[in-house]
Length: 323
Image 1 (cartoon, rainbow, N blue to C red):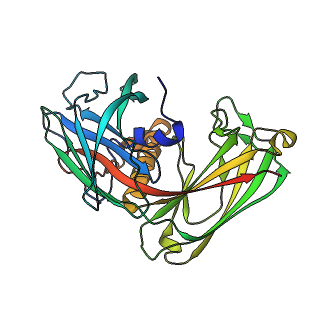
Image 2: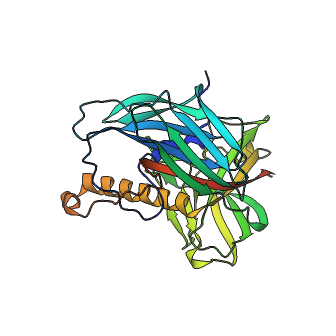
């Protein structure tokens, strides 16, 4: 069996109760279980959808209950339908009440496309059917990728345990033209590309930025910042990032980096913001007793008839060599 690549499932596992629409979810008093959909996807990447059941508050179950017999169908804007099947080779581990449980994904060989419109329908015995729809942004035009020279860095990642040193930094500049559609976000993923495959040891190359349009994202294996277009909507944008590596300069030189620029639709960006707000609240509650008395984080969902998120991102990829 193979485990689904971490850069593809990094957000799927986080989205069970996140979403778009600024729809405040009612307090779930129903005793009937409901479907929860994990459906964040990238263009030119095969479909992977998770389907689990929402447990009522009265439930004593310590497991995330996977729905194994669901019918998952996606329809594109041209009326073509794709049936996803449960794939035992594509899985991730989810945690509920501190205990791990394996979740298998529903997959297909088809791929969403940039600019495409998609509708999702999920049916399962004993559950109310759920639906949703999503539009994938177009790939931004005018993209320019520039990788700068290496420089020494003495900073330590204090948040890591044990703390990690990053002796080398690289500057990365990305320019693109933002379309005049307010609410979109952008994210950058950097991977080492070694002998035709992404390295599992260096899959996440951390980076920092002082861009005022960005907000940090913690706790995900995928994104470290999301750049919102509220301050540059419809304009040309230039991102300046500082990549950090645990390699020495000699070991880094000649390595290829695969750089993904993700254009997130508003639902995608809002899902991550909602997740981050929840994580910030939990972290503060552990450190400050007064945080228990703050307003709860409002969870959003764009799944009709259930919970979860169905939202897409357009991905453009570049391969550059460190010199």
